Amino acid sequence: MKITLDADKCCAAGQCVLIAPEVFDQRDEDGVVVLLDGAPPAEQHTAVREAAAICPAAVIEVQE
Image (cartoon, rainbow, N blue to C red; front, side, top):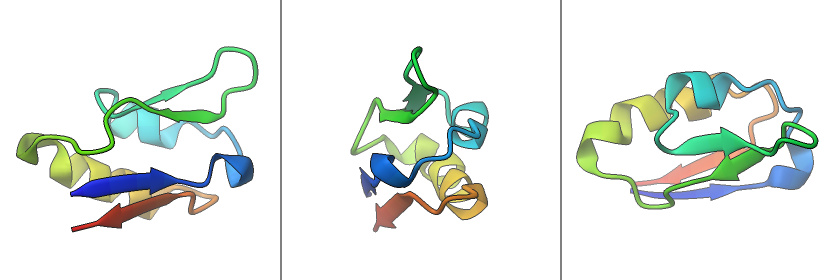
């Protein structure tokens, strides 16, 4: 799995951080998503897929 983000479109909802905190974080100054692990281990894949699906701005792209 490889994850890419379009942080410019992030609306700082924080849903990704709630679902997959080992993979995503938010910048302190504006809440925009930060990718902590662009190639997470297999045990994180389900959470990452859910985070991508629920992202209101659709900024998370997952390549299997």
